[in-house]
Image 1: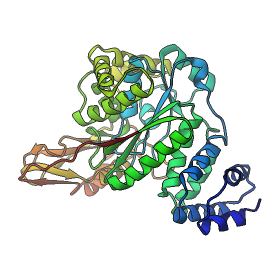
Image 2 (image 1 turned 135 degrees about the horizontal axis):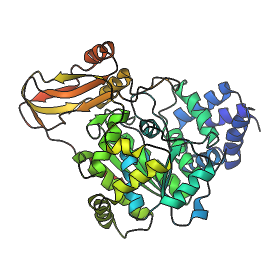
Image 3 (image 1 turned 90 degrees about the vertical axis):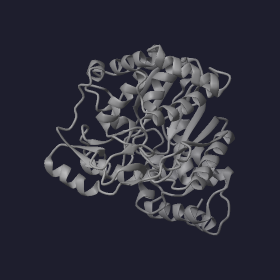
Image 4 (image 1 turned 180 degrees about the horizontal axis):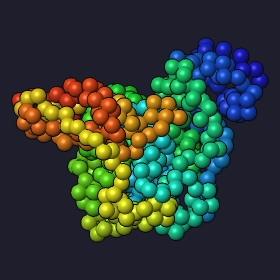
Length: 433
């Protein structure tokens, strides 16, 4: 088989066969296809697209390119959740203990953040002593023991995606729906999920800026799941302002602790309950979403979810008491950004708030960039809330006065204030099954 001919075939809009797709992925992972040819192929896919059959086969080929987890030995039905990325999105850390407390085990591999969106593994790293890397045996043993484990992705899980994503990132082919969908779904398939719940975000703080783009991506991933025999549900959620009030690793862990004790922000709880209820439905634990939300709320009211979270932290070497006592590292310097006029907060630019948090040290510009776990932003007002001129709209946390000075420059005009209460769009736009 000749890679040049396969590039030409896709360039001309012709579909690729199962054999051809597996040849491309396997040969690239082995190093037999050079980056420049793979770049050309990715650009051809970017412009010409792929059919559902091609995209499903690409997903399967990528999933089979490295290690695959077999969760069937643990018993039960395993459900995974994935977010397409947002600002202040800490739902995995709520959903894990809530869903596990309702009887559906959660065995999850998560990623680190890059750019303006945060990563679950970075947030867990803010807990002193917490081990984000476990052996496969340790990972499975912990899930069997307490029903919950969240770890960093293993080095050989879907190597094709790791290689291809790095290439797409520097060749302007990231925003291809077939390539995004296969990237997401290949990791879920390889991680052993039998049911998959997707939080597909749209808006200023998301990669998909419009609901139409998010819907197209969601339908593609749901159809891939169906083609590969995995129950897949996509929830479209609004990311025009940060989710919750905290943006930054230690700050978000403390907000999770509050939420698991019944003191979480309304928007964070709404999205978490929706996603968690669908996870319980996909896990055959409840007959419908309404029953799932009842169980999840009870897990918080009874303290079961909070206790599960503390046990989870302890099992992976974390200092759970430090979280309970709110003794996490928080940057020593803070500075408020004040409202210039009185009125209702109209809107936030979630993307720029993510960039601001990254500039303060809470995110990374490259994969090698260090993170300052104690820095970030806390919103003291959300869209639709009243603020007086001179009152803070959000608070910056930095490790130095110089860092805060830079943050102050970036923090201007990130929220608008007006006399009339804004009409806020629904937080949950649609559910696609």
